[in-house]
Image (tube, rainbow, N blue to C red; front, side):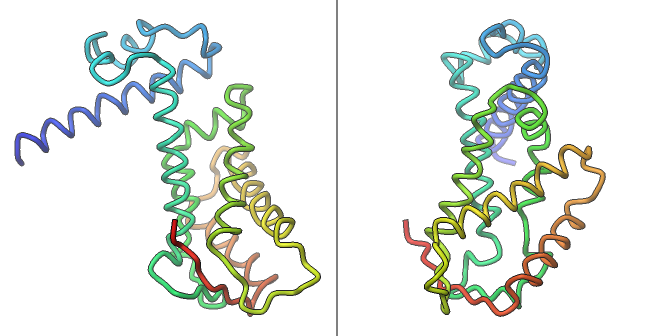
Length: 201
């Protein structure tokens, strides 16, 4: 392993320790009450390490939220990212990665669903999912009577609803089971749907 890779891994490990500490502390107290000392003590780091990467605790929180959103977008797009079309009837549960995403950030999602902390972030997630549908997916055989905005909202809140149910049940199902269930629900309602993709930024 190169020296740079070793340094990069140490940085990533330190940042993750701080993010884990922040999530843990936010389950017990308001964000405004959390101090840098609280964070570094729980993360078993020194204050110098914190200030190497962040100026304020708000910077840490912002980076953590950006991480979640970026991974959410990548996970949602996983089934079709390298395709020109997306045929729902050909979708497999193994291609659905959104529940793997929730599992990866389960501490963060549990925090936003089961506490008052970052309550507005739930709306942010739904807006991101809605925008992905509107931006990426164009039905090859659209029904002119269906409003695309409402259809995208239905899709986004349905997926988020499954995520919330899974979280509130303490992740009692595997991410694989949740993907399988989502696939069955999608195929039952849209068995012949084919989307033309529009992934340019």
